[in-house]
Image (tube, rainbow over all chains, first blue to last red; front, side, top):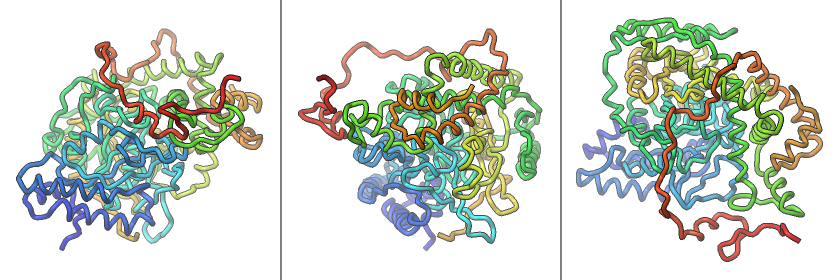
Length: 493
Length: 95
């Protein structure tokens, strides 16, 4: 019998509907794989076998009657940032110890309503702050990929490192993730998976632990472009509970696959050719250009002059919003409480004990840039630069460009506890140099695997679209996928 | 701009995070590295530019001013470290 965990969502969907396999068999296959692999990969922070089996059984009853939703019986993993009723939800932080919400996030509720099965909660950087999944209270996630002939452990990227590793390592059919500066696209690129951050407002943020509210967006990580399209269709919705949810119907993204890109105008931003960019990244980009040209697209050079300011802008705006959002963790309403001689000392001791180093660093930066005397010089200025970054994209799109092609990351996956990265926080931040502009402008972006580097590690390309034109991204990413092929790690775990 | 030890301690106090002397000294270097990195924004000409306050240009949705939720005190205090009769318990704040 074939290993059921190797099926993509679209393949599993067909077999479930054709009654060749059952949701219970598929779920058991994943639960077995998790049990065997999780000690090595550390992708899950909690597994929910009872819930998974009950959901699979309910799916089988529907499927037997020829009923069921778009994801009926498909086993998924959920990033620990999503509120799941009665189930571990801690944003991989110590400060939310024991927190089990009495509500379900809109995105996960949408998935369960469509018949998906929950396998458990996935590891991540604490409060989604990180690019390597090393800031988690639960320890780092290990990338299923290794360099050729090496057994050195690599990071899966972050902050959705558990999601990316679980999808690449066949520990779920697909996963939810979130992206504030690149947290879906960078780990997708590091693991040879597909990740899309939709337009701001496409997926409801309700019930997701907030990091930087004006930037946070949920999206899927999947094995291929079709699966990402299937998942996003179910995750996205119009939601009255999120005032930034945009009132537009959710299209059938899967229908965009296979459409020709003939005549499409693809922009190549010259500012993304950054100093010291690795030869392999440049070559990959050129390959992507050639594939789209061969498929009939028109390639044009474009300029996004404020690109280099996006990352510094991000490191003012996101910590500022985080310092406000994380003020709620005070030892009163949920999670950890550390005693103190009075209430203020209780707050201070709780937050000192509950937050990890990177979270403290960002809360401190945010507090500083919002404090009296610095607000205008840092925060207001950053918001103005954000306007300019968005205008760069508006200008390019209004000049007739349909989609922008860039590399997804400046390198392939690096080692766990990389010395340069741990010694210099700014070096770690540079991982998001190609992805963060998209969050600043609220645009959709997709990372799609495009090849392997000299060490056999996956590299990804990124496509950036106009607001709410995710269909164009799926359509174009599919062309790249067809040309590049798909990439899977060799099982060592 | 850069921060010194006294500023780090003041910011930690504002952020309600207890820091040891060692933590604070380490943070001086870390925060200055980040502040040094964001310093380059000072060179951008932002004259006459509006600050961006919404990722999508849209009017904020407003709901009807009516009671649509409530009556779930038990749910609200369910995850609290210390409660009594649906109240959160905290150390004494008033003498």
